[in-house]
Length: 442
Image (cartoon, rainbow, N blue to C red; front, side):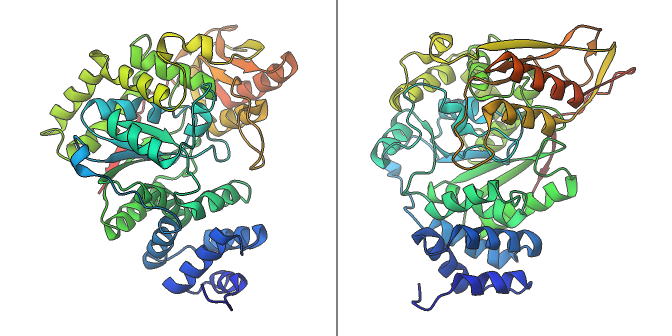
């Protein structure tokens, strides 16, 4: 980085809608990484990109500069039994897919170094869910991370100081400056982490709907195309699926609650149909893409076998143990996962059918309970959230529970219950079901 580099000049240029050079972008990312750019400057840069976007070349330069701001993992292929692959979601409410899909992919013979993030806005983050497991190391040393990926087959961790540190800082600022929805910033954030992990292939789950950051199908397609384009420029095979987020993906929202849902899914005790549809679609797209399976039918059969054989559950438990959590976690999850002091059903005030859900409002209800962040350094209460959330199309009678609220106290539960009633709309006619998987973008 040049001694005379001024971050404000890059901000001014992008503010005015001009195109940044690769050198200017690398210099700004260098300043971001070194702490030479202030919080205000980082926020101003994010806002300038939000309003004026970036060209494909700019976005690729930003992605690669953030990838190269830290270590880029190199895998010893002779020690691996299959390809290095991963899945990423743009985030939603009740989206706990990563927790079950990573061990399912590992059970099919892949290696999954999943570098995940914390919650953004109203959405829950994979790391926040895993943080509810006592002892689980979200930022293991690189040697441990490599060993778990190689031996167990999957490891879900956060961004360490060594991996894409520029993105780690920008990610936190985006959350509190209303710049989360920028296509360019989302693309660079996702792919910088995934490229730093040394992947062979990636499947993207791009959410669309009132609980997603993209609430318009054309915008979701634009993001999918952006990710596909930049990934190709960087030499990464990528498949992008657009999935529905007009209701929570799982019938739960909250950190420890979603871990419990994952255990129920992997053990077969409970396997929600919409959640299963998305898990399978993402898994099929990915392992068919890298040649683990002969075709999509074979891929589906392999993934189903990973569940029925118990192999995915075994690898999930092993991953948790390897990263410092309890042994045989799935057998004792209720013992180890914390529970909220106040659990309260939210009764319906009318007869009818669930006709619509304001999913973002439900996500914000979880945030207001303490299950998300308003500021980057906020502490999260892992116990709070919603479960047993009814689905669109389900019939309800007066007094039937719309869901249950898990809260720190009765007052907080009652406040959240009012939000839930406002978010879940009841009509006189049942709604036709909408597939959870909407389309694939090439």
